[in-house]
Length: 208
Image 1 (cartoon, rainbow, N blue to C red):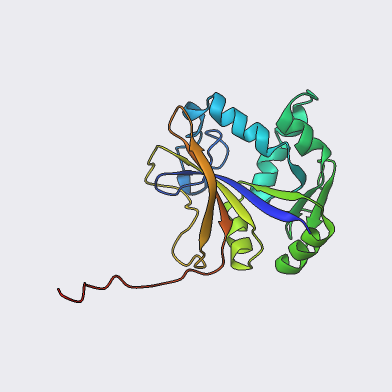
Image 2: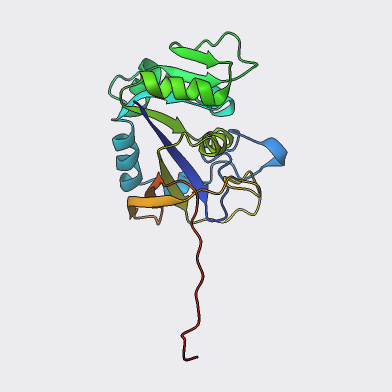
């Protein structure tokens, strides 16, 4: 049974839109693209290399797939830890509009998302990685299909852009499974999905 692992970059105000460049995703007139770039350092690079040492397959949202497919196939250095895995391993994209993907190894998932991803997990031995793809991750969490989440929080507030957990997100509890902070202040935390939240109440002392 495969394990579905999500890796996401967010700002302090929860924005995940266009971390990698100014033209990556300008929906809604977003002008802050490339906000993660100033914080890249050796700690960040080491973590990304470790993540890309483990996948057996990828599951990508349509927009992230489009962004990746215009960049990574052009990176042909076999020693590149990210490109070598993205170009060689199976890639799965839930989409009703992607008909003839040119990136080798791509399978388009056109059926029911929960059923398709459950079947993918059942036939995969190891990590199925989701990178970016915030809307897809929210849907997968809602279906209880995400096993763990690497959340990289960058020390910047943008005040605009698509947020990872907007109003209406499915209530979800997480269990902390480890983390670190890079030299530039990026908080890298790993969480395992722990079902639905539990609730309680802080009571006053009996003699108050």
